[in-house]
Length: 278
Image 1 (cartoon, rainbow, N blue to C red):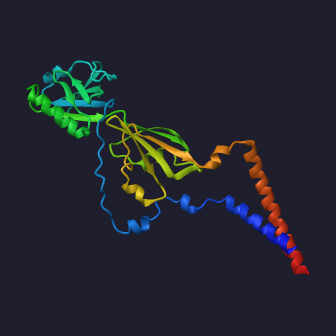
Image 2: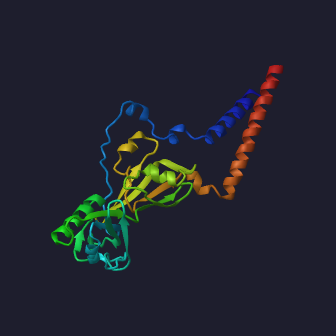
C-alpha cells in the first residue's frame, strides 16, 4: 500500500510540474534590479536614418509665396523616386509665411529628385539632416534666400509575425521606437511565445542582418536591435507545445493528464486515510 501511495504521489507531482512554466522563462528584464539600481547612461544615441524606398514628406516654407511657384510641379511617390504628382499649399497666419508640401520616394541609390534642384542625396541621413541638405541646395541655387524645410518619414513600419497575440504591421509613430513599443502594439507575446528567442531581421546597405533578443534579460536595453528601424521584421518563435496544440492527440493528452492527476491525488488521499486508520 505504501508503494502504491508513493507512486500515486509521484505521478501527481510530475503531472503538476509538467503543466507549470518556470518564472525564469516568463518574467521580463531579469537582473534589472541590480543593473539599474543606479541610473545608467543610454549608450545608443539612436536616430532613424533614411533608406531607399522610404516615402518622405518635404515641406518648404518662406515669407514670399511667389517664390514657391518653382516647386509647384506635382510630385508623386513612386518606386523610381521623385516622380511628379500631388502637392499642397498651406499658410501660417501667425508668422505670415507660406509653404508647400510634397511627397517623394527615395530611389534605390538614395536620392530624391526635386524640382529645380535635381537629385539630392538623402539616404543615411536623419530627417533633420536631410532638411538641412535641401535648404542648402535651395540657397546654393539662389531660389529662395531663407527657406525653411521640414522632412518627415511617412511609411515607417515594422512587421511582427509568430507567437504574438495580434500579429500585424506596426506603423512607427515617432523616429525613436523600441522593440517594446512594437510588441505592445501587438498586445504582447502569446502564452506560447519564446521570450528568450525573439529574432529581428534588418536590411542595411543591401545586406540582411539578424539579431536575437531576450525579453527575460535586462541586457535587452543595450542590444543594437532595441531601437527598431523602418522595414524591420520581428519573428517570435512558438514553444514546442504549440506545434501539437490543436491536434486530437494533444487534446486527449491534456484531458487524460488532468483526469489521471485527479485520480492520483484522490488515491493518495484515500491510502493516507486508510494507513492512519490502522
